[in-house]
Image (tube, rainbow, N blue to C red; front, side):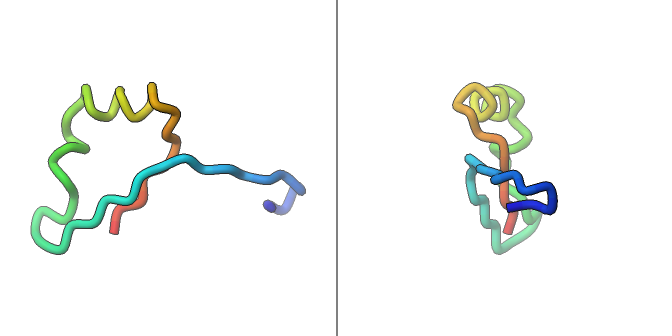
Length: 47
Protein backbone atom coordinates (compact mmCIF):
# COMPACT_ATOMS: atom_id res chain seq x y z
CA UNK A 1 0.00 0.00 0.00
CA UNK A 2 1.40 3.40 -0.89
CA UNK A 3 1.23 6.61 1.15
CA UNK A 4 -2.17 7.51 -0.41
CA UNK A 5 -3.71 4.20 0.69
CA UNK A 6 -3.71 2.67 -2.80
CA UNK A 7 -2.77 -0.92 -3.49
CA UNK A 8 -0.33 -1.22 -6.37
CA UNK A 9 -0.33 -4.35 -8.46
CA UNK A 10 2.56 -5.04 -10.81
CA UNK A 11 2.60 -7.53 -13.66
CA UNK A 12 6.10 -8.01 -14.91
CA UNK A 13 9.15 -9.98 -15.77
CA UNK A 14 12.52 -10.52 -14.15
CA UNK A 15 15.53 -10.31 -16.47
CA UNK A 16 18.88 -11.27 -14.99
CA UNK A 17 22.15 -11.05 -16.87
CA UNK A 18 25.37 -11.96 -15.08
CA UNK A 19 27.69 -10.73 -17.85
CA UNK A 20 28.17 -7.77 -20.16
CA UNK A 21 26.12 -6.00 -21.54
CA UNK A 22 24.12 -6.53 -18.28
CA UNK A 23 20.71 -6.49 -20.01
CA UNK A 24 19.07 -9.07 -22.31
CA UNK A 25 19.05 -8.34 -26.02
CA UNK A 26 15.29 -9.04 -26.10
CA UNK A 27 14.72 -5.68 -24.42
CA UNK A 28 16.23 -3.96 -27.47
CA UNK A 29 13.70 -5.65 -29.75
CA UNK A 30 10.83 -3.22 -30.24
CA UNK A 31 8.39 -5.99 -31.22
CA UNK A 32 9.18 -7.93 -28.03
CA UNK A 33 8.65 -4.84 -25.87
CA UNK A 34 5.38 -4.07 -27.69
CA UNK A 35 4.23 -7.63 -26.98
CA UNK A 36 5.02 -7.23 -23.28
CA UNK A 37 2.75 -4.17 -23.20
CA UNK A 38 0.04 -6.03 -25.11
CA UNK A 39 0.28 -8.91 -22.59
CA UNK A 40 -0.38 -6.44 -19.77
CA UNK A 41 3.11 -6.26 -18.31
CA UNK A 42 3.80 -2.94 -16.62
CA UNK A 43 7.04 -3.69 -14.80
CA UNK A 44 10.49 -5.04 -15.70
CA UNK A 45 13.05 -5.89 -13.04
CA UNK A 46 16.62 -5.89 -14.28
CA UNK A 47 19.01 -7.77 -12.04
